Image (cartoon, rainbow, N blue to C red; front, side, top):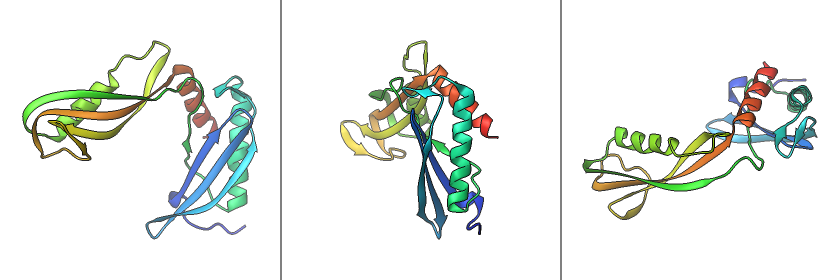
Length: 178
């Protein structure tokens, strides 16, 4: 089969579910993401979004990636893996910083770091913190507050916690692919 594109231009999304694995393949061409295709294969070793049999799950992921490589004529070197299941919860939280001067990158970083320090149960960890907008002195809808002046900076963000076991399983799946 003719291999098109360079591996570094290939972007792959992988959704590992209880019964199926969906692989979506795209390629960056001239600065635009072009859809190459989607492949669905069977999944084993998962139950309700959690890994219950690591060997079966790793083999299912390997098979799905090999089938996608063959179907779309690409070499897959990395993937973006979706995380789903009852263990994942999304929160929207506000944090404040009072400075009374121009907002700096350091201020924004401190607010983001405080989001990561929010309490999560012991069996969970913060997987991602995604900024969703800022407010300065009551003015909403600010996308980038750096350089603006105000007394209070608030950041709206989405906090995505997940179970330790799921995060560890995802890392083991990644290592199983290598």
